[in-house]
Amino acid sequence: MASISIRNLVKRYGNLTVIPDLDLEIADHEFVVFVGPSGCGKSTLLRIIAGLEPITSGELFIGDRRVNGIPAAQRDIAMVFQDYALYPHMRVYDNMSFALELRGVPKAEIDKRVKRAAALLHIEPYLDRKPKELSGGQRQRVAMGRAIVRNPKAFLFDEPLSNLDAKLRGQVRAEIKALSQELKTTMVFVTHDQIEAMTMADRIVVLQNGMVQQYDTPETVYERPSNQFVAGFIGSPAMNFFPVEWRGEQAVFAQDGSAALIDAENAVLMRRAGKAVLGIRPEHFVVADGATNGTTVTVKLVEPLGSDTLIHFDLAGASAIARVEPSLRPKVGDRITLRSQPGRIHLFEPESGKVLR
Amino acid sequence: MSDAQTTDRWIRWLNTLQLVVAGIIILTPTAWMVMSSFKPSFEVTAYPPTVIFSPTIQNYIELTKTTPFFNYAINSLIVTVGSTSLGLLFGIPAAFAVSWTRISWPAILTLAARMAPGTLFLLPWYVMFRQVDLIGSYTALILSHAVITLPIVIWVLLPSFDSIPRSVFEAAQVDGCSVTRILWRIAIPLVGSGIAVSAILAFVFSWNYFLFALVLSNGDTKTLIAAAFNFVGEGSTQWGALMAAATLIALPPLLLATLVQRWLVAGLTLGAVKG
Image (cartoon, rainbow over all chains, first blue to last red; front, top):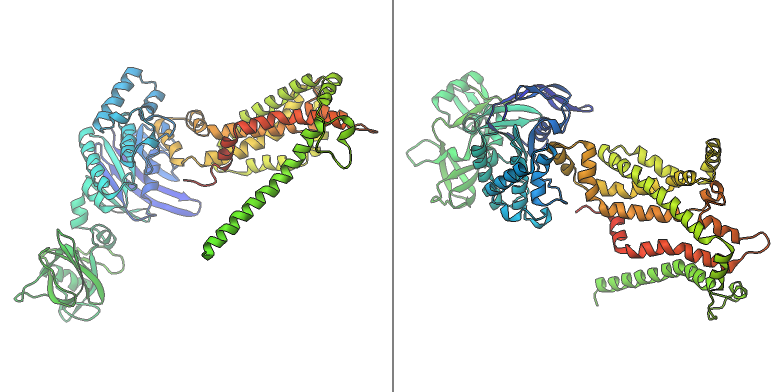
């Protein structure tokens, strides 16, 4: 078990800079999720920690040990790969015992550890099978078992759930979370799925173009996104954005000049900024009754999800979505009045995307 | 009948025709060789050729009586097994290294050496081997035949190594393996059929290679294929004995190929389509 410390890390492939300059501190026992769109550098960063990619410049520490240039084999970390990367010619037992055997661990100890991990992951019946005789979920568990038996300083997961079907993904997600609580080891998990990030992480690193956009708890990343990219990336359906301006002592939608529903606190920010991008999450719209101020929109599409209903509409020239009570089932073409929940709107600088505070 | 069905039928018919033509082209000389080896000497060169004849093993008796045929066979075996082993010893790590580093020029270089006419190597080798007093030795023959076997091993194994997902090697790295250990513990067990196929092909090509043995061997180390050339005389050729020798020479590779036919096809197409 160990902390991971990344200082001024730069990664280039020829002339292409994948990670321009990155600092990150992952505490001992912490479960950190790297999340971001394809090509944001999250897998590269994980592979750098694993020792599978060399660092162009900067420093990487695992615990107190500087591991720049130290081969993966000597870093004492375990990794679960997207395609599981089990050794096809070895039985499940041998897959799990291989790393211990390389380290000269006595046979009795290997046996004890493999059987304990197999019991933990419910794969005892499959220990004599070859990987090709297992289902995707079982292979996934074996890959985790291979990591667990080693008692490594840190676990690294590279999108390990992306090859599983939706139901199994949810199940394994919960199992990994439970495992992290039981093993109390530093875990770094890479995903492009923000639900995985939100549900599993102690802290989330949101990456874009190799730069950390925000590094905080899931709640903070969701409630107080540091910029428009994070706000748009975290949350499903994504946050709605509308350009707004301060005109004649009130905030209006830039496109049509109609009043934008901004509370007093944000009105102060708007007055100072002049122009901004207003962000509202679909779940932070409420359908207003006649007596309340709001913005009236025409329903374009209704998606009843069972647990709630998604209403699509156009507002100030932009397509938007509101998530409302499941009992509410307006028809396409209906006019409804929406307002935002108090304190639930976000304002961003139009150019930089930074949140206005 | 729909257009698609008609097209399918035509394709099947053309495929069959293609197979028959290819079969005739490949098998006719082989059948001719085998038949001639069992013909009395006067009938071997008869024109028009006879298809129905009284078979005799006279050519085989003459072959074994007039030449130390089994000594030559042993020589061939030593050179072929030696050069195939040498090819595997260096070819397996070389193919793995090319696949691992994705630097392909060394593999292309070996292929270029294989493509170059054998006569290109003969003079320098003759001079070199003579300087170290190795002309006529098994060592010279084995080393020279490695030029045949090494590229075969590398190029047959390259797609096999390439077809192993990179992440399997990376998992082994993370598990604590050095590159050498990855080769022995992970890569080689996964390309077993590729190794077998490359070994068989290397064996066959080395067994059949004529030129190096003709120049670099002596009376004690002459291989079968070079010895068979003795039946071709300036004034007359002993066709019957030559055909008997050719039939016997062709037997080991044929036998090997037949035994591992299924494996051979699977090994040769490995890596062509990644699952």
